[in-house]
Amino acid sequence: MTSRVSDLTRPIDLRRRQRRRRRQILVAALVALVVLLGAGVWVVRWSGLLAVRTVTVEGISLLTVGQVREAGWIAEGTPLARVNVGAVASRVAELPAVQSVRVHRSWPDTIRIVVTERTPVYQVRDAGRYYWVDRTGTIFHVAGQVRPGLPQALADPGDKRLLGDLATTVASLSTTLRSQTDHLEATSPDAIVVVLSKDRRVVWGSADQSATKSTVATAMLGTPARTYDVSSPDHPTAR
Image 1 (tube, rainbow, N blue to C red):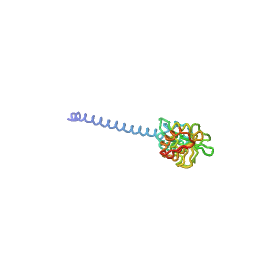
Image 2 (spheres, helix red, strand yellow; image 1 turned 45 degrees about the horizontal axis):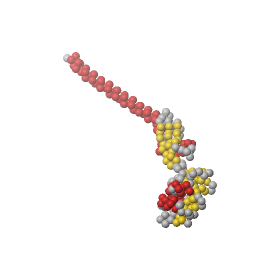
Image 3 (cartoon, one colour; image 1 turned 135 degrees about the horizontal axis):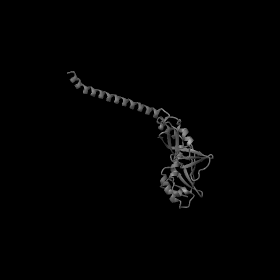
Image 4 (cartoon, helix red, strand yellow; image 1 turned 45 degrees about the vertical axis):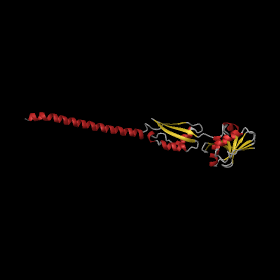
């Protein structure tokens, strides 16, 4: 009888041992997975194995690589995953010449900074200096010499509104007007004058309706005159 009972319980014991072994294997696998994940997090976020060793800068011509790197302020050796790319972009964007910037991680050890610089629309000549102004009226560079081919203006470089209105005016000039323009003058936002070659002037007035004023002024150039007044483009005059 005892032998028969033993024979009956032996398969049950075997299944119990198998289930216990499977549980042990599963627990061991889970522990190993947790350890591996923890090690992976440590390697990525805290160790020096995936740290910043290179910072590349793209898209610049006016700025230098050193200026951008200094503004970005990325400490060499910082784990790549811990670099706050948004904060780096914000710091670089504070450089006056930067219109926009993107910052990317490039594994295993590189930060890429891609810059789009502002484009000058014209330059303000004042006290022997040339202030480069973009389409928004923002001064972003000061040069000691004139930049050939870039329209010039005589105006107060500290008047933000006036600089913006001049940018609107310059952007509206037709190819014909631009080719004959010597420079622009403006003492206030309502007193913009486009000075042409051969001692001719276009009284522009304000930057309002600049596209219409450009069309009218271009058509009037066929009429010999010293002054073309398009400040009221519906009633232009030439004298």
